[in-house]
Amino acid sequence: MVRRAALLGVAAVVLMAPRVALADDSPAETPAATPRAATLSPSPTVHHVPLSTAAEHEALTITATIERPDLVSRAVLVYYSEGRVREVDFARSTSPSAPYIAVIPGEHVVRPHVAYAIEIVRTDGRRVAAFATRAAMQPVEVVGNYMDSREEALLTRLHGRRFVVTAGGQYASFGPTTATITGPTGAQTHLGITDNFYQVEGEFTYRLLRTVSEFGIRVGVLRGTSVVPDATSSSGLNVGLNYGAPWVRLRATDWLHFEGELLTSVTEVGFSVGGGGSVIMGDPYASNLTLGFESIQVFGTRGYSRFQARALSWLTVAPMIEVTTMPHADSAGVRLLMDLGFDLGRGFTLVARGGYQARSFASGGPAAGGFLSYAF
Image (tube, rainbow, N blue to C red; front, side):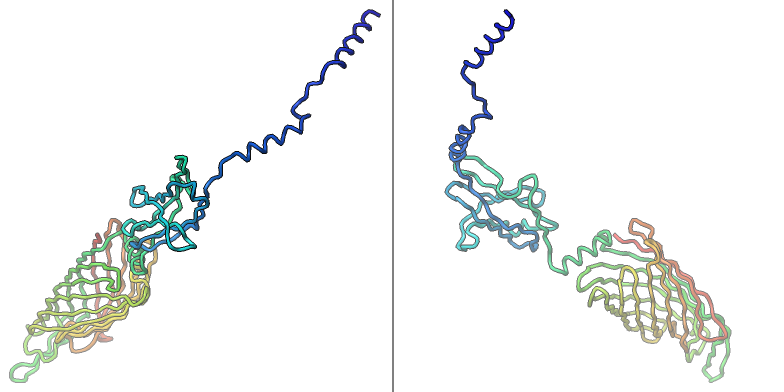
């Protein structure tokens, strides 16, 4: 009985005590948050359409619209170019669609890209990012004109090597044949000879990679024995050519190039001039078809077709057909040649040549040669 009375007394005290309000039971106090939100100061806002490309060496104009400019003491364009971060202030413009502009000078708009961000300085002194950030700027790709871009792409593909020097030589035999020598009295002598020649040549090339794609000069020596028309002695069957040939290659399109040369020389009978030309269809630094000719006074004329195919990244295969009266022959011969080009790395290329040629169905002979070039 005593315990029950005690419990009833505690319950009565609890019921008579004033109730303590909990936060979840006081919805009437939540509107107090609304006056606090209303006291926050307004923020200026920058509206800007991002740029993604720009022309090289041309001033780049950045436009923006600022809401509540009365709260802004300064708007700043922060941009990255040539390894440095620079700043330029926005200024008012006369255009209603772009009331604020900032200009990146043309000398700072260089390939491959620039990047920028916009910051504002509030009237209370705070500096805040309004568009992008210094750590994550808006990238802008800088492009040149088509010719500049093409030159840059080709030069990158050629590993920056504009200069090429080449040296090499070849030997060709048309096989044994009979030469007729007419003496001073009109008597004719028939001699058995080997119709052949050897050639040593050096070449320098500069790759401009524009409308004038390449130009250079070839110099060389050619010596041999041939069936020379109207020869009056056995020494007249010995032929030779010391030559120099400046040349130029012009680009019509990416897949079509024209090449021309001026050939000057000293032959076994004196000074001679000539020239040549070719058309290159396809990629001049990979797979292509070349059709060309070359002619020089006294010494002869040749026409050829050469198809070059890149078989592997380090190997090119180039079969060639040539019809020629060189060197100083009385009839044309046909040469069937094969060039194998090996990329040795570090700018070195080795070309090995082999083949067969003949001036008649009765005889013919081998051809062999090689050329080593270095590009730098």
